[in-house]
Amino acid sequence: MDLEKFIRNVPDFPIEGIQFKDITTMLKEPEALAAGLDELLQHSVNKGVTKVIGIESRGFIYGGALAVKLGAGFVPIRKPGKLPAETIKESYTLEYGTNTIEIHKDAIAPGDKVLLHDDLLATGGTMEAAIKLVEKLGAEVVQVSFLIELSFLKGREKLGEHEIVSLITY
Ligand code: AMP
Image (tube, rainbow, N blue to C red; front, side, top):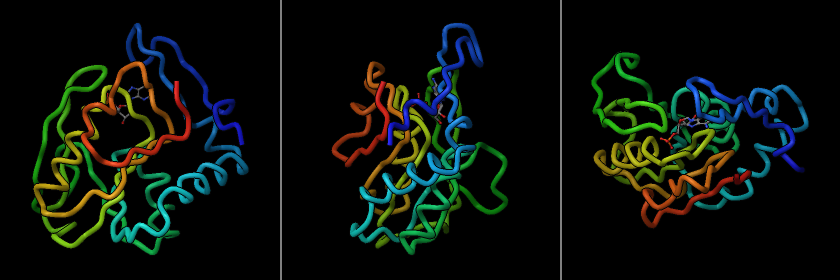
């Protein structure tokens, strides 16, 4: 399915100069929603994934569905102050501004095979920080997946040798 036609481009959101890729127009269409999950799954079955980690907040949508389909657990990476128990943190530069992300210290452990998922790869700062969190806790990243990749920002260059899947490339 041509998923790109379901993505809405919103100019100058949240600040001037950003072309925001809005996935809500894809998520609300049942067939596009299902096709997105099927395509992501085709790339991630048979990799022995034990935990799917979704990045707040748009990474939670397919992250949760992927975890169920893969027979894996789901773990959230969240913005600061949201997770209630003990966390580790990592700071990074976003396409617009800076941020910090956190994961529960006991969410993953050595031996876990992790699929990291977010809606969109821009500069790669968010996912680079997420990979660091996973590796600090001793788990292995087996795949990094996105619905959308803004390839002109060269985010994948920040993600090392990890396998990167993206369904729609601009
Ligand atoms: P980055 O760390 O630069 O790769 O930015 C990725 C994160 O920021 C993802 O969680 C995206 O949801 C969000 N993001 C960055 N740029 C855009 C964009 N142009 N449209 C939609 N979301 C974006």
